[in-house]
Image 1 (cartoon, rainbow, N blue to C red):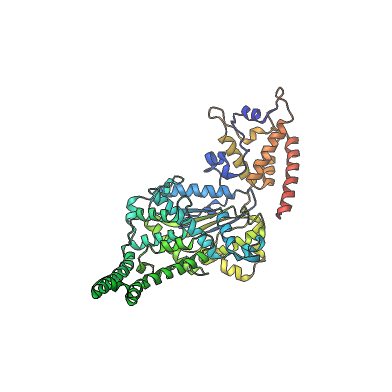
Image 2: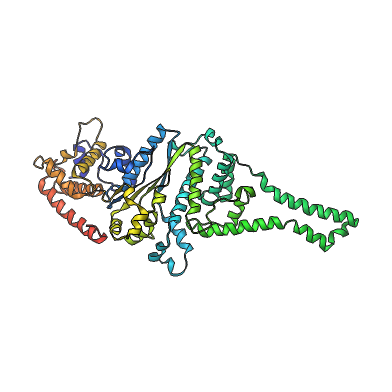
Length: 499
């Protein structure tokens, strides 16, 4: 007997439990995204009008990625209904590009995987978030104000026109340092962005023109005074003519020095110093004075850059910035190590940053990291103020919630013309609802539930032939499969340090 025969009998067109990862789960994304939420959903999601940070710890398969996708969907809906008070959403879930570049900046033994992340600081996170935000915003503007993946983030020409000149300058300055769209060369993408926002900086030509005019005047005067070309060969004439270019040369050297410092301090981006200098030279010299460029190992400059970004976003209709942190255990530099996860995430636990006005984090973290919280000193708790961060220590699911999830998936996969069907219909009447819910309770997480139900279906169907099918999973099959599954699950938990 085949599994698809069993499902066809109930009018179910595909196996509801074949997928385990929400990121690639078509059933979840097409039908269940707005379905059952975790009991702590309201605390995690909060109110977009007054965004707040949430810190969630959950074991593998507990639904952290599903939560992230649900938050994105809900915020997109909110943005569509509030076009002048939207949330600018960033998915901080692919750490590999940042970690690879960061590790290349280290030297000696510090480059070893077990030591590299010990050098990761809060301002590295700030740089990564600025890079994600500026790249996404720049891409939207260059793409005529639209985001193919999120129509609710559209930026109209009228909104762009509302940007003041200092805000346009700030946007282009942010793009100079943080725009990391790899499909275009840096100078090309910067020029396209400048054209879209309508920013002109004719004042940058004053110094070259003054140098040219000064040297031309000196050479012209020498030519006239000597009565011919012989006057141009005088060493004093040549020296004075060249001296006219010294202010411009000194200014370019200062830009080169500043570009080198930025390239050294922004460790999550691979900057070419000459390219960075060239972009900085496209601003009026007066407009670069006093700007908080990230030239030091500190967070103060980054805070100022974030404030500039928020001011630009506010004018464009985004009142808040929401950062979704997920998949912390997946980068190859971390390789599943709880200690490395801690080294990567712990710098983020800074109350000043997590409570920055207009900025909200949704930290969806592996449960194996939560054990380190009890080992921290008083200083860590005073700095992080986790009591203010909507902390959820265990993203656990009740048996009833898992039962509802299973029901939603079965209903999502049934034929529209057939009668209603639920997960209960798959099991023999001798298995009570209470027994079924108790079994689901032991599974703890949606991913474990899907794996278990998939295995139950396979085990049941393998006991019967196509000619003599059985359309009800029997109690002995349920209990035998559960015993084997829990043994495997406990073995995995011991290996990764859960339980």
